[in-house]
Length: 232
Image (cartoon, rainbow, N blue to C red; front, side, top):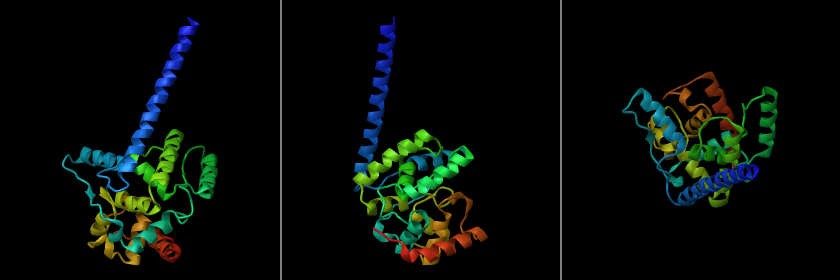
């Protein structure tokens, strides 16, 4: 009887491990494909579209991929300055930021901060849900290592700028520039780029033409940091 129980346990563990390996392989295959192909969608886009269609069955996303060369340097600098100033220097993880986030989470008794880099944010947007759990952070870390190993920093930033949300159902630099300023992503001024970068943490809070005291203050901080931002 005991032997049968142990056998069941081992078979269950083996099946679970096999499933885990298959999932990781699925992630790797997708990332390899995105070395020179644009993502048609992401996990986060799919969730947002489902949410929008719950209210309006005809809802669609605003999303148009543009290559790195057609995204203004101003926006690249603004986003790096705002989201991940050490982007070129780390291997996917900013350990100082993670340590600070850990201290905040420990004090609150729950996950309220992540210290995420651009690579980590991209891992989450491409593949994962938005829930804040330790197991999801662990999977995010694994995917981040895959991204940093398979893709160049330039490609990571290119994909990131094309898939993050910049308004309700507005995804990517081109759609954001058109939605908020009626111009192409290549033509964004430093002020416009800084404003878009300031929206990244809470993109659905701002509609086209939004101006708030917080947004203005955040924009000025980003503008002051943009010249120092290093790009791939």
